[in-house]
Length: 177
Ligand code: ATP
Ligand code: MG
Image 1 (cartoon, rainbow, N blue to C red):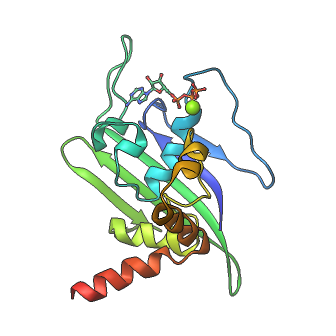
Image 2 (cartoon, rainbow, N blue to C red; image 1 turned 90 degrees about the vertical axis):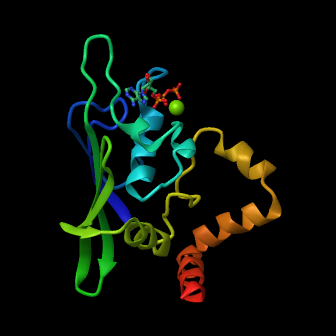
């Protein structure tokens, strides 16, 4: 699975709607401190179904919504769209995943225009071994965290990398039924 396009609106410092096309090959994001490089990676992780506001450097989930500046009013919602491409039986298949949060109303998810649950989005990416907690996304300070991780945490990282994390989620759910 690869990410072809990102659309952001009202997410952290991305206040105006922005579209980023990710071409094949290596993409670099450069800019001065505080310009939003880490926010971009967090937008991807958030749209993949991240439920920990702490790992998005926020106190609560609504902290991802543009909070306003001295010259700009705050926004009432944040929305991130990820367009992915995966190999299918009849050639490459595109999937559009959207997450939107509104103040006081929580998050809503859509896959190809259909309303889905957080779990559906998280499992879709976990099965492709690219989930929000997978080593496919390495945020600032993460390398040191991997070195310092307890064996059980390191196993979770390896399971995400192997694409089997979704199986554990399904098994836990089956056991609860
Ligand atoms: P560095 O090079 O230091 O790692 P960076 O390019 O990764 O910097 P980020 O951490 O992505 O920068 O961006 C930080 C900026 O995002 C700060 O200016 C912060 O005020 C802004 N920001 C974060 N959350 C919000 C929000 N909810 N509303 C408005 N601005 C926000
Ligand atoms: Mg950064």
